[in-house]
Length: 482
Ligand SMILES: Nc1ncnc2c1ncn2[C@@H]1O[C@H](COP(=O)(O)OP(=O)(O)O)[C@@H](O)[C@H]1O
Ligand SMILES: O=P(O)(O)O[C@H]1O[C@H](CO)[C@@H](O[C@H]2O[C@H](CO)[C@@H](O)[C@H](O)[C@H]2O)[C@H](O)[C@H]1O
Image (cartoon, rainbow, N blue to C red; front, side, top):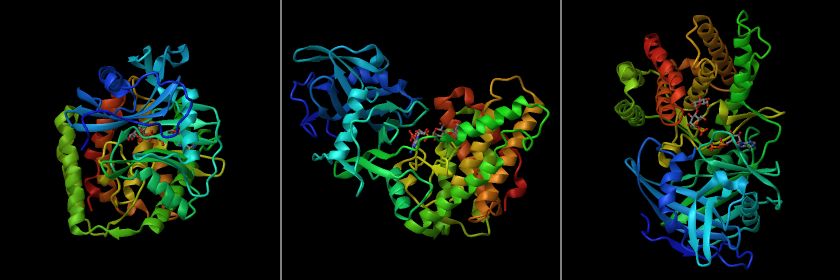
């Protein structure tokens, strides 16, 4: 799939005439990257040792000091070889404010230099918007604005500081550029679905403004997406967390009585998600899951569970009820509609603007292979993701506290109230998700199993949240298997 030697290409757009600090950056960083990569929040497969790092391609995006390099590296791990995109800056010495991005020391023709994470360097990040605005193009890298978009350049940049699977940079509060980290061949679903929703005039997205794409062994790949930055927003997770905090602070009040009640927002969010599903169906079509498709879906759920049970011992106790909940799908009496969906919907993926809710990050679950993420799926998968998220929001403030039945009761009440309001809002536009209980339950369980693995690898102290949900969902619900 890839060439063994790092290949050096000329700059996408020549810049300052000053000499290049380092020539064979990819090869020199093989050792340092093996230590640096696993420490990055966006690095996938954290649970597994790195057997080797192999530079695939290195492009100089800016010569001189600081130097900017676009690197593609293959990381060899037990579950296979994964490609990662890196933007690496090089300076003769690193200023204090970039020290936390240090990758390692490299040797150039004129002496030693330091390689570091270039996304942290405002002097380099702006170069990416310049290249998009200019429509820069080489054989394998294409920077392009969306049709009709004129971009402002010279804006100051800062990285997004929230937890991310990728890396996003904000430019002057006008644009946000997402740099995809783990690279799979194929057009990113994020770019594809944003374009599709824009084309039908959806009001629930941030408009796409440009992209960085390329070609890898004859297949298209997406490296970045530039969008409108939505200023003055709050994400759904922060809003829900505020509401739950209010509730916990008022031990005597019900979820409906506290100042920060979230139910009306949950209802609006349900409406927004149903509208997005409607627009995705309009733009990219729908189908009905046939018997073979249903069997494949159920088999995928079983496989995913078996894989998780093999590595996460805590799941083993629930494997039986989980497999039964998946099998229950094979006997449902209703047709299952499928279409393109968001694929990883949760409260952190929705922004409340002054005008309503906007959905972001249409990439699907980062751990799934791209073809699986781009397949038609039941829109109830997104509903299940959001219902899981209400459960998370209700319970995460209790993690680490001494067990307290009163707080558990309140958390449960908050989750049920907001899950109900979300479904009511969704049903006011589309199908009521509660009319397909076996499907919804199986999808919620499948999501909770994914979350168990996600927390196991990324935030072990949060593992009790999805594990507790698996236990609850597995023990109730025998009556919803229809
Ligand atoms: N269009 C936007 N306007 C404002 N903030 C945004 C926008 N898109 C994303 N963000 C912020 O950036 C964060 C990361 O974006 P996201 O697309 O979820 O990245 P990832 O795929 O890495 O998880 C979000 O949680 C949100 O806070
Ligand atoms: O990075 P992404 O936003 O694409 O998604 C991954 O990370 C999410 C956490 O940031 C994770 O979501 C889980 O935790 C959320 C709270 O932080 C919660 O609202 C979600 O319901 C829960 O799934 C997501 O699963 C993962 O793919």
